[in-house]
Image (cartoon, rainbow, N blue to C red; front, side, top):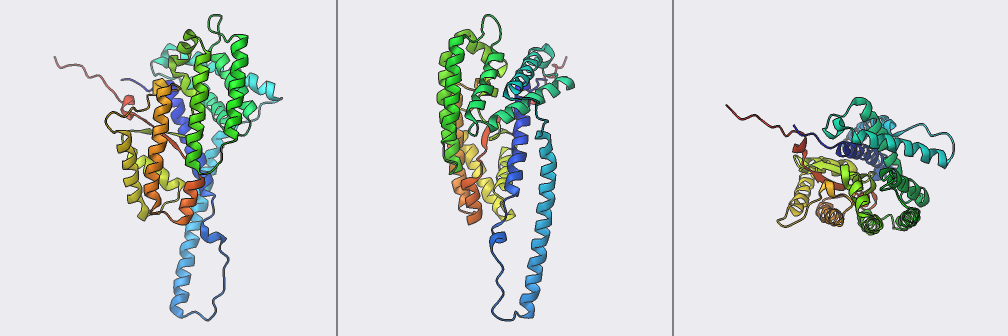
Length: 353
């Protein structure tokens, strides 16, 4: 049996948590009816209309109760993202992040981990580090300087050692590159959400190409080893890792939750999801390779994925209400990364004697 790589396990966990956050935020968006003030009728209503009104009010009350219960569940789940603040200032937090990264690197080098047998204690270390990268993603546009410092710390720890450590010149150039990247991200308009995501990936592709040029051959090889580049590229808050098996249903469910689709809209959502997958699987099309994260080819595949998703969502938007179309314009667009779910269940069967 061949297990998923530890990095993929970490990113899958981040994807799930990111979905929880996004759905929770979407659930708190009040329905359009909530903003419409009640206006008394100009004349007395008939008994039939009164009965109909009571039925509608009862239905709305049940919907509100279900929504409230759902929000409560999501808020409970979201508590896993809350950690106690590290005492002290930014220097102490960076030092704590550095130590967690070092422990993470140690776990990644463990032969048992490479074989796919992740010890429960080691999984705790992986999860804690994942949370740090989650918080790092949240600072990309809001606090460019902090983002640059944390991401540079990642590169410093990943390249630690006499042979591959960053030189003072590399460190200075890298700091400037990453800070400029964060500043550029902060200037990208928030809406439309799809266009924002495209611009973010384009900016990231450009800066990561310059980071690769800044590194030596051995440094690039070390970063590629164990798929570490996957942690430095992308935004965990907007990436969803989706198994090829059942991908249509997964995407449909995600769109249903984020854009609050009704049951009658699900068939159209499934058609749009299938159109997206068909476009991604066209002959000659390059797909995203997990072990090539951060490469120009990976960024090209990511950009194509977002463009095809936007085309599929444009199909779906025809069946959306104005309120849902506004959510489509403003809600964070999930970036889909399709992976082969069968990689976790491959079994070698001995030949019959």
